[in-house]
View 1 (cartoon, rainbow, N blue to C red):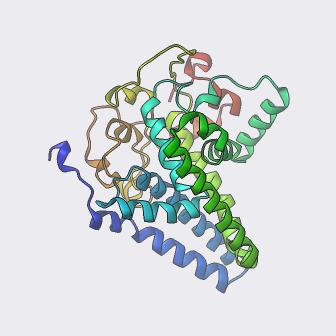
View 2: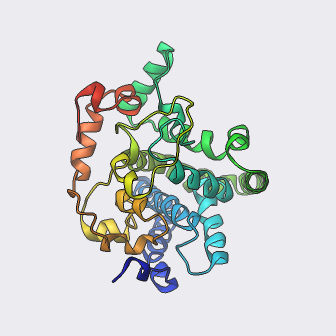
Length: 308
């Protein structure tokens, strides 16, 4: 097949809904029908489902998961609600991430990772959190990029900003209503599963661009780097093909995604970039966790001599 043949296909998109439907149904049943260890298993299962909703939000945000823009926006908002990320904030800020990948200080999602904080307390918090699996890096990523209207005002045009503001307000009102009227249910199964899912999402997101040598523009006029050349500034990881495709939805194939950001995720495993298929997830995890949080997130192999 030619690259142009890898088009959005509604049936293939719906196939990716099978595992989230199973995980959410099983998780809710276990949480409401049992207690003790079985309840804990239900929370774990739901946390996997909530991790998947973030990946599916990512896919719908590219407007290429379904063949219809309205379906992408509809499901993007559904997954955004589960992920606690307003859809229009995500869509426009994430598109800027793809435009500016390769310039660390121009990419709105990485501009704050140019250098570590000089505050010793913040450095200790970063290191301790990374060691104890407290997902502060993901929380900062989520709130600073997709809820921070001041930051979005700097990066988005007027139309995009108005949509982002509307999205933030609608989501905030929705959460307020749900938390007020359904707090017992939220506290019983959604909140514990969501907090656990933050750990999984951090351990996926940080595989993609962290601890990679990425140029800094230092305020100079620079041009965006072509998608094909962005491959050197991103990282994939590899695991069992079935898990990769039907649980992670090929989200781990991040190099292929950056080279072809308009390609639906269900096709990415068909792309051969002629690059080594490494690291495995376990290799990345062991090396990343062997570093301090400050070294892993804010520095690169040039400083640490640790390569994946």
